[in-house]
Length: 103
Image (tube, rainbow, N blue to C red):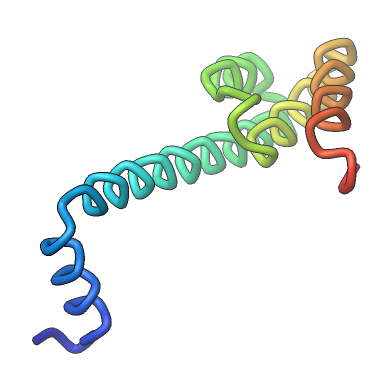
């Protein structure tokens, strides 16, 4: 048993329920992808802050803004910082529509 007995119990449970393990793997993969998009969004924002707008725009264009609120927020800030107000406004409107309680 590893130091984290909870992890062993969870893995044993997944082995007994194969359908759940594939859903767990799928969820884990999706979470990693969301982390990747968030990291790329942060990088893009830093690039935009330092005036490296062409690279920031290229990076942010690869992030599916409709997938996560954070990714869309980063994209909006990048476009606003790099002087693309229309794109930033479109993202802000999308965020307001999709997340009305927090906008």
